[in-house]
Length: 258
Image (cartoon, rainbow, N blue to C red; front, side):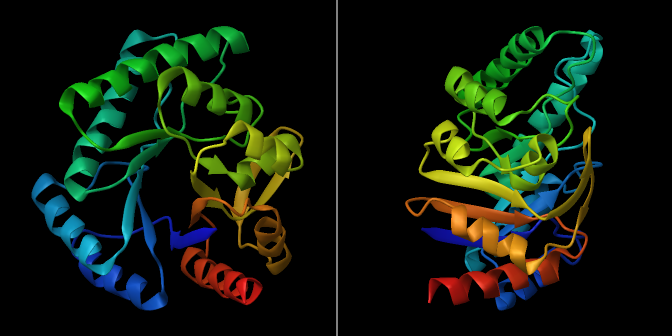
């Protein structure tokens, strides 16, 4: 098993190259750029930042804006959601990013089955568009942490089978949603060689996720004990102390590996 560690954040365009150098010095091999509120990197800057990341051996990925709902009852909101994902893909392609992670949508007033088929249809259209454009970037719907939000491990696994999209396994979200992480189930649902994962501590209640928190040592150790040994794995840390937390996870992993 090989693991790439890194944080969910790059910061400002002006400081991006300097931050990437700091990440390299800390031993990070991946960085997820947070377009969670807006796609803030322009085309000309994307090429420069992507070139620097490639020189430093840091894999870039993107998290799309939170304002996405592919199951909205309003057609214009669905179209706006798809445009946001595709804008991330466009800039991501220029960055040389591998994937765009996104939250697919909400159940709303529709059944889980209806929601699945609606979201599957929209993701299929996006995947086909990427093929037409001959872009290399993948789209990765994420396992979600609230019970009223689309994105159970089973739903995401089925989307991968039905649409050819990629995926993001968020272990904190799975814990919050299901009150435990059934690692054997996850291994069966995602047999792929490469896993893109999010991880952090999390505070949750009956309805699921409340907020992320700094990961405890025992939580890191529990994760490493249960990860499959035959995969390439990205671990993007989303805790409030994401730099220190990523470093801590990396240190614990190195000790276990030795």
